[in-house]
Each structure stands twice: as structure tokens, then as C-alpha cells.
Length: 145
Image 1 (tube, rainbow, N blue to C red):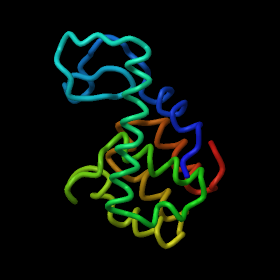
Image 2 (cartoon, rainbow, N blue to C red):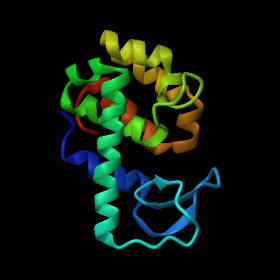
Image 3 (cartoon, one colour):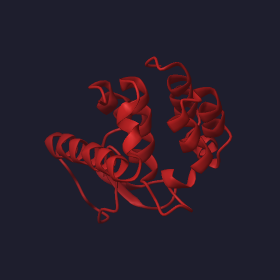
């Protein structure tokens, strides 16, 4: 199961902003990466924390529905999968985590070296920089990075 550290990792990676802002793609976002909100949205810290818990649960449900094997991974690697799905969504095979077909196949097969290399070779890695390094290390080693 994912660990209590996942929420802290996401807060570190995404930040926690109580006033809506446009992310790098121009999408209005608030809280901890909670996207597609109206411009001008303002939240309390409690609203931010509640939305984060709901968004983590949504990412986990997407993984359960589309890659049920993720639950067989060690906790630290489950955190990586949930973080990736939280950040990218599952997608449609051409976008989102589902577009990482070779990386997902490597994770499912337990080839974490190849999976980490796949993450780092992606366009996503160039967009999120240090986050990708940390998640690739955690995926490769199975130890919280």
C-alpha cells in the first residue's frame, strides 16, 4: 500500500498554493496540483488537504482499474506509481501514465533498472527535473528517496 510519505512527497513536488494559478500548461490549478479549477479560486488549508486525499485516492483507483498489478509492488514503489498517476493521470494510451507502455511493462516484470531508465528518458522527466530523478531512484532501489 502507499505510504503516509506520499502526501508529503506530493506537497514537496507540487507545492501547496491556496490561490489558483496557471500551471506550465496554462491550466488553472490550486492546492497540491489540483487542476481544472476556475480562475480566482481560493482555498483554505483544510480544503487543500481534503482535495489532496481525494486526488491520491483517485490516482490509486485509476491504477487499480488499469494496472492492478501495482498493488503487488513494495510500498516505496507503489508510492512512485501513485505519484506518477497523480501527476500525469492515467490517460488514453497516447497521453498520461498509460503512454509509458515500455516503462509500465518493465515495472510489472520487476525490471526496475529498465523502468527507471525509461522514466528518465521521457519528455516528462525534462519537465519535472529533480522529481524524475528522485522517483527513478526510488523505483530502481525500492527505498524511499
